Length: 233
Length: 233
Image (tube, rainbow over all chains, first blue to last red; front, side):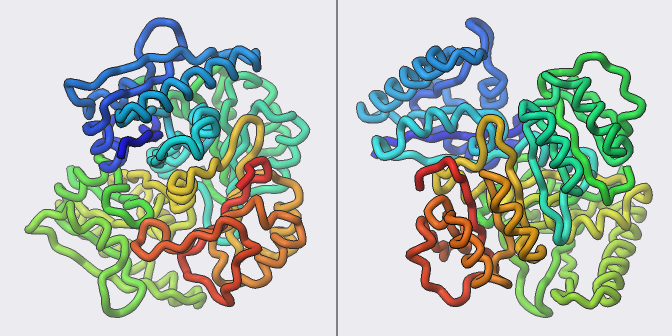
């Protein structure tokens, strides 16, 4: 029976996808790739490229990168119904997504529109923060501590509270509100328990091991801060 | 130059390790595997088995599964110094660990004893909770919410507070204090936003989609609860 596969391709390096994901990429008939701009291959598509078969049909579908809810919902509706039609016509369809499909991914919005309608298999992927932690030999969490993953699009007051109450944190999406986030980290005396990594596993990585030395005004879209209050950086 | 590799082998299925991990497993000279009991292959070793080369030397080293700090520290000291000696003598040494090496892993204790002494490369792995979420098509976290990963060996009061204040949670190590954890989930009206999975990706998986239907007194060591207050299970 034909199926839909949601495939996590990991953080950037094509070798950081799972063997399972690579095998499925070889077998599918159609690959749907999310395209942030109207031209150019998506990063998820590039990561998957070494594993794709010659006869594969690639459908690059535009995902609007804005906050117009109506436009977004229409885009997701259209992509989901196109996939459902393809699977029902007997094709195995894959959808690639950066990192892990169930962690802050557009895949979730597509998935919601397909559950119960077609057969769905989701393949996990290495998240950016798991990759950064391994790459920097920086432990995320041990023992009886909680690990809190915070999108920095959240209210600043909430982020401040989370920084105070927890020992092990991952701050994602730091680019938008970057200066204020650094200020919050300074205020909480966490500058030397934190590490900032931009473009991990993407060829032009930058690592800041002590945020006191950081004098960037802006920072790359793919930037993540790890904090471990018990780790001497 | 010879190196030490800390290798995350993922949750159980040998296909859920990364291509990078599989390639490194083929190349190493010595594999150190953590052995929970004095006999029997460790699960991490079994997962890695398909990728090991014929000439590999396997060193099964006993890790005590108790809370005697002195005994634990001695075991870690011994394993770390054996690895350092082997790497300095020109061998490439690998150490396999379940899930991801930087998330609640004994690997962290070994790592701490080796940083600065030998060349170390850590390879990330799929965590049990990323795997369960993908496998069950259960989104972990979206948008502006935080994801909180909680080890249930933590104080019950703290767990209760975290359950109240957050929308997206992963509860790990639930086997020990199982009845009380279920009671906390019930008290917080989260029974139908939660899913419990035991032995995911390990051949004898059990899935409970609504915890009201759960009438187990005990639960497997490898059990995880996912909670998403915004997800209709």
